[in-house]
Figure 1: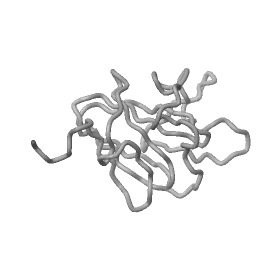
Figure 2: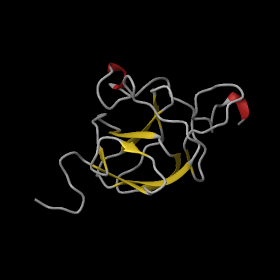
Figure 3: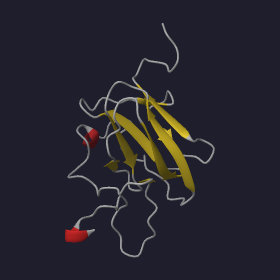
Figure 4: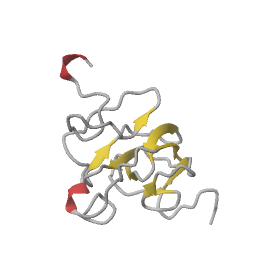
Length: 147
């Protein structure tokens, strides 16, 4: 990209390494933002704390992130060093095909409040070759069920 932009690089910057960070089909990925999302640096559970990190398997795992909530959703990839890496916001009731990798960890937050959301009724999504969708919902709400 022109002007020294880091667009297209979501992986940690290391010379000579094969890029194995997730990417979206048809879009360039922005580089890491100015820092972790609000509240992500406190070391709490589910936010890239000690020991929680993606595995660099380089085994492709395509997955559709489906925002089934009425909220704007911030997808967060937990990188190989346990740092949260924000990806472009998913608008309410939309989906996006992601090229991730087996063993990559994803969290999803409300883009406005930074509240944690559920993915496939769990707090954490682990990319795997046999899992091709990630349904993002509000906590306490079960997809397709009514009280």
